Length: 97
Image (tube, rainbow, N blue to C red; front, side, top):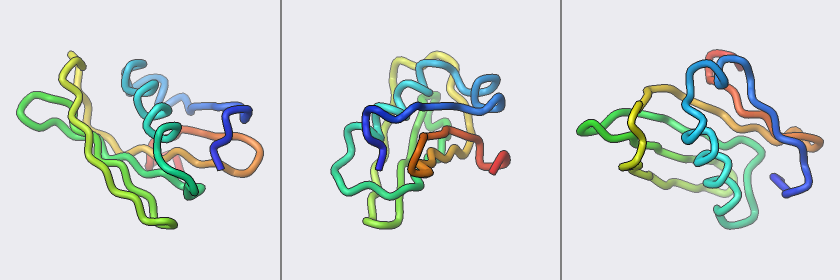
């Protein structure tokens, strides 16, 4: 799952509402997590004390990590999925699923 040679896509919703620097961070978070990786990665973005908080989880195998980004100037609240369907990887807002 999530091999480096797979094409990566994002939906219009992500493109329009999630700052580019956060999009890059989410891809890097998946790249840097230990293998094996679940086909579904879940990110809950929230604002905590004016900073961007990102809670990253997956089910099989269980993974749970929270990141605080201090350099993001326009923090957002959203739930984002990154899905590996075997041929490609797609980042989408939860409501677009």
